[in-house]
Length: 134
Image (cartoon, rainbow, N blue to C red; front, side, top):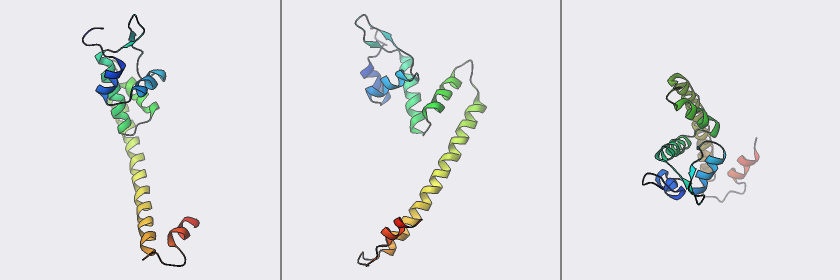
């Protein structure tokens, strides 16, 4: 193994992911299969680390596996399509904004329900009543 090649453990550590995550991404085709040593151990190149960091960051931003697969394809030098990537990011942003709006509504409802409890000594619990309503 050359100085630039990485073991699976070092690759995972360098990208901040679990070792099993690397194997999973290989199994589903997000990560290209690495070369193998004569003993059968995986032997990763710096490009593998770069791809793994790309995947990890995409997951941190909330992109799903299929979207990441498309982003990887679009990141190839011969394919790069900034407009398509922008459209994907815009769609994802709309989805995140909708989730935030839902969470804010949930927060307000729960805040009011908790406030309705007062000191918590009511015979009828407002939280239980809210959970039972439609």
